[in-house]
Image 1: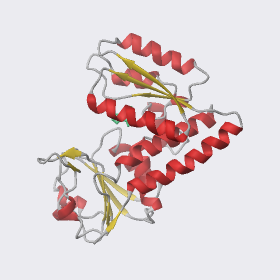
Image 2: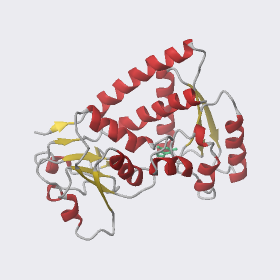
Image 3: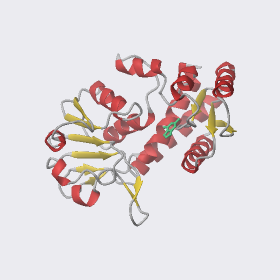
Image 4: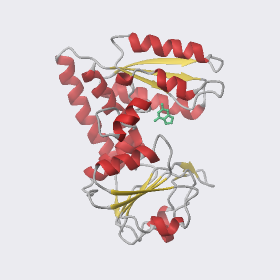
Length: 280
Ligand code: GUN
């Protein structure tokens, strides 16, 4: 059987480290505060926002919650973001996505002060990642790098294939693997002969949003497989983009769903909040 990469354990270790760091910062008079904005009451978003607030409380980060009605206008939201940018005590700002259709997400992301952009979604943060400068990095791909490093998996010189090219996961994932000296290929829905491409991978990161799409035919013997997907299957059980039962026997290491990549996103958000607090 392969190594099962334990995202819960790695996330817990990072949160313990951050808790100690936050205590030390408090002694130096530095407190950290994350402002979380949710527009509307999408149930999945409410769960994510609740988990973020809980993680803040656990680590010792203050949080401000703004729960705005679905009808909130773009102008009202931009005004709130502007106010939070100016507030000295707010170190990080997170606007939960997706936003209602009448609001331009890009305009809202651009309005966040890059110094408070703990999601790493601002074009300035993405540009900094692209050219190797300091800036906040999108939490899920940053978490995957931590998972690999803390599981003793070398990235330098490896063939890395990322399936998916979203702004939040696929693209920053490719840039981070490149920063770690991997040889990186990005595959996507228009890739010809996807199996041929994924079978080159020593490290395969899958973020396609299709339940159990990646079966053993897509995976080279001994590859490391990272599954970013999260879905409910026909029996209402959680599953990923990777067919775990099919792939596990042929790979050397794999992330489970749940308990793999998922817990890392919040751990890295907390990491970014602490960085934002220090930066301020
Ligand atoms: N919606 C789903 N994932 C995320 C995330 O990481 N950040 C924000 N802001 N919204 C999300």
